[in-house]
Image 1 (cartoon, rainbow, N blue to C red):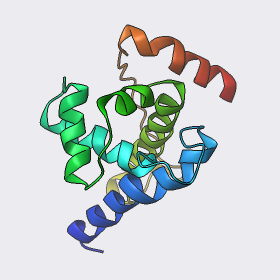
Image 2 (cartoon, rainbow, N blue to C red):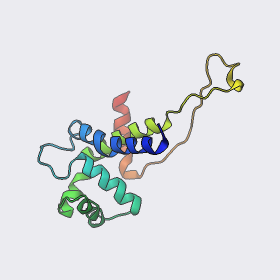
Image 3 (cartoon, rainbow, N blue to C red):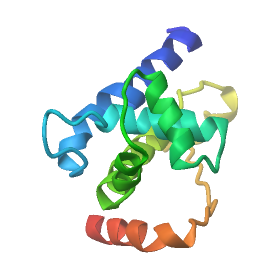
Image 4 (cartoon, one colour):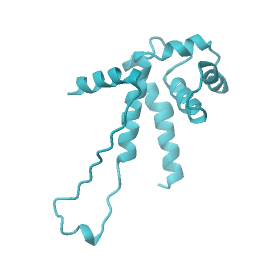
Length: 143
């Protein structure tokens, strides 16, 4: 699969399909008639913050309006709670896992290592203080 086609498939998966699948289990959507559903919320966050990392609710609302959905700023503000955090966290974890999967490379250099060669990354990324408790509780539940 060529890289553009692969990127398109990944964008479809993580901006539309997975948010739709996760919106109920994360508690983000309670009813079928919600205008600001999982995919819309994720697209709003990704596209809005790509353009401006400190976008206001009003600026994020412009992104939602470009998707032909009209809501008040208060509706957007209300989505930034535990359920919205859970939805975005699950997507980020899955997307990161997808991104970090690599393809096997055959090279004579590795022939001597029959058991495999394993690379690990010790990168530490600090979270903003307002997200530390939410993400810490999430990792404790998985243990």
